[in-house]
Structures are given as C-alpha cells and as structure tokens.
Length: 528
Image (cartoon, rainbow, N blue to C red; front, side):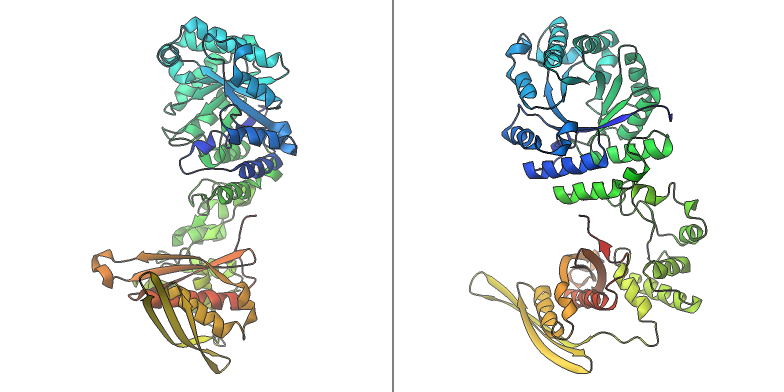
C-alpha cells in the first residue's frame, strides 16, 4: 500500500457542524481552518456559501488567510430544468473565490424520481452541465455522488451513468457517498471497484452502521485516492467517517502517508483544540487521541507494559502525540502504584510502601472514593508515607451555614480555623453555596502566608451519589479540579456529608498546588 497516494478531505466546518449541539461562529471556523491547514490538510471544506449569511461571511474573511489555498466551497448541481448559467447557487460557488468547488448530485434513481421529481435523463444533464459550468470558470471540481452505494444497489447502471456524467463535465474526482451510513465494507469495496473504470474515485462515508472508518480503509484498499470525513467523526445523526482514526490507520497500519510522521504527532493536540473550540470534548475512549486510549488499569496489564510497552499497546502512543497512562483503582496491583509514583516524579518506593498505598486505595474505594481521575490525590497519598512529611496547612475547625435573605437571595457563610506554620488563623468567607464559601474562607486564611495559591483556582466540581439506595444518607463523592497557569489537577473526597467531602477534595487540591507545582502528568497541560 505504500505506493498509493491518498489525500484527506476535511468537511468538519460544513458536514461536521450538522452534529447536534455543535455550532461554530465565523471566528471559530477561521481558527479551526488555520489549525487544519497547519496540520497539512489538503482540502478544507468551508461550508455552503449560497445557503446562509454565516458561510458567506466566512468565505469573504477566509480570502486573507493562508489556508485559502486549501479551502473548498460546497454546493449542489443546478435545479432540474434550470440552466447552470441561471442557477444562483452555482454562481455563489464561483463568487466564493476558492480554487476547488465540490458539488453533490443525485445518484440513486429513486431519489431522482421521488425527491427531485424529475426524469433520470434530466438529472444526468444537470450533472454534466453544472460541473462544466464551474470548470469553464477555472474551478477544480470534486463531484460528490450522493447516495451512490444505495443507488448502485438498486440500479447499478444508472448510478454509474451519473458518475460518467460528472466525469464528462470535467470533474477531477468522483466521490462515492454512503449518505445513509449503513453500508458494509464489502459493499463499499464493490462500489469503488465498479467506479474506478470511469475516473479517479474518493469516498464520503457516514457512520450509522458503525463502519465508516473501516469502510474508508476498505475503499483505499480497493483503489480510492481521496477520503472525506470530519475531526472526531462529528456529523449528523451518528456522524461522519473519523479523519483522526483514518489518518492514524493509514499512516501507521497501511503505510500510506497522509501527513508524515512529524505532523501525525500533532493529531491529539488538533483533536483537543477542535473540542475546546467547539465546547465539546474528546471522548476518553476515542481511538488514538482519547485520554484513555493508552490507559492501563488492570494490575496484570500494568506489570506487563512496565517490562514490554507493546504488550498491551498497539502503537507507540507518541506517534499520535498521546501518552501511556497508568490508572489507579481497587483493581490495581503494586505495579500500578510503582508506575504512578514514578510517573508523577516521586522517585521510587519500597515494596512495603507500595503495598500500603495500594491497601489504602482499595479500602477507600470500598468507602466511595475513586482515584482513576484523581491522580493528584494518589500523589499526596504517596507523599504522606514519608516519615518527614508535614502538611503545608491543616484545617482545625470548619463550620458552614446557609440561608436566604428576603425571597430570592440564597447565601452561604463559612468559618475556618487553619493551622499554618504553627499559627492558627480564624477567617470567614461567603459565597452563593457552601463550597464557594469554604473556598473563600480557606483562601483568605492561606494566601497571605502562601501567596502562590493566589494563582490557583477551582476550575471544575463534580458530585456523584455512590449508594443511591441510601437516599439522602448516601455517600457522596466529590471530584475537584484545580487550575494554575495552563495546568490542571484533580483530587477526590468522599463522605456522607457533601460539605465534608468537598472540603477534603478542596484541601487536597490546594495541598497539591503547594507541594508539587511542577508535577507531571497529574497536573495536565491545557490545550492551546
């Protein structure tokens, strides 16, 4: 496969934005297009300039950016019985100013007759004329054959005639679309093989059957030279083919270079950048770039990878910019603890110390704690085993009261006594809730003596009820995330009293910030 040249085509800014809950502003689209271009994406589909003011504004603004050379405008063939020269949508594609234009047309006879409500021959004429109209105006044309695989299944001859019509008009590549997303790899292989006799072939595949990535790779094996998709598989319904997984599989498993080794190492950061920009998130279990993609929890697995990393990792995580992580839980063995201690830069611990940490973790998880996402708490647990360990501060007494002023003004007040360097400081704080009030009181007591805490702030707070059958008496688990100068770390607390659980996690968060300001990776870097 190494001799095959394959180009990726990104449609995140157009097809990806059809994902439910995803909305990108013009500025967001410009920033994401810049990042895709820096990655080396050959084609970046920007949107449908004839459909809405936002996309029209985007294409106008994009002309001043370096990524304009890769930008693609998207639209459709002329309407039935309308000449291409009279179709305003086709004219908007010309006016968008891109070198490449992609247009889609109907390929399934049933869609031509029932959706367009026109004759099959009229559809063929619109395809050829629309492509030719754009080519004659200096555009490179990509033709997306909508519903090709469904059309090929119901009437192979007509589906291929639609491709011939686009090829005759001057389309440089014929993209076969699994618009409903339900085809299997062998069906994609057969369709690609049949189309190759007409011209160069690409694919645009959806994931409704869970096969979009596999279908894309099968298409390349069959001879396709362009693969369209979106970052992280975003798109309508179940999404599009995931270009993140496709790029990694092509480069690392099939010997097909799409970005090159150096750029491929940016893949995780690009995915996280897109997620941060969109307000969504990269699923922890996402192939290659997810936080858990190379995370190991079982003690047997961890013991093995410490001797031979590839024992339970299908690639070197650094090839895609990711990293091996060891997860600590009640399922851990001593190898997990040893690996985590080393990972956090705490040196080595004796077998006795490792066993003690492990037993504490197992006991605490039985009580409702969870350490998988609270690596800073694990680090502190190991530190507290040292004979010379002294806490940076200690909460001696805390008290929280909540109430309401008037009809709507809820409030909380907290008082704390905190021992710092042998001195007990008594302070009070107020907030909209008990955790905010405790945080305010703690900071008032600590920052004058520990000014570095002024840069630390609470960035996330999650509460989970552990034993729901106990109702309001159930154990509550609190996960706190603290942040400072582009780094974040998480701590955990658990108690039948939600305030006590919150205070425990909050105290650990501040203690970690004081004890280990340079720790990695419990303090993880925030994507730019």
